[in-house]
Length: 108
Image 1 (cartoon, rainbow, N blue to C red):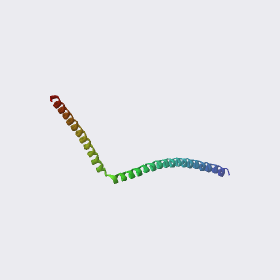
Image 2: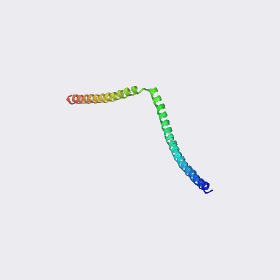
Image 3: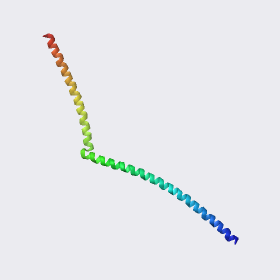
Image 4: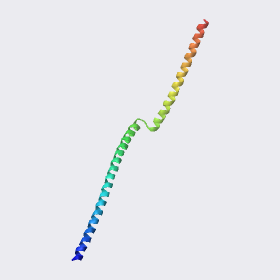
């Protein structure tokens, strides 16, 4: 009887050890599942951002294509240059007219 009692004790210890090992494994898996849930929520947030960008891009593409926007930016730059040149020429001409009128008035 001592052999069956002793065998049962060893078997119960093995079962308890196995249950403890399985419990630790389940705890690790639960932690990993929580980490995965966090990662999934971050990915969902990024996905929402991407959807918003796609919506914005499609609305911009309806107004103008990227190449049209580049051309428009170049045109605006050349118009700024033209404006600066026109104002400079206008000021020079005004100055010359003023000097001419002053010279005419001085000699008359």
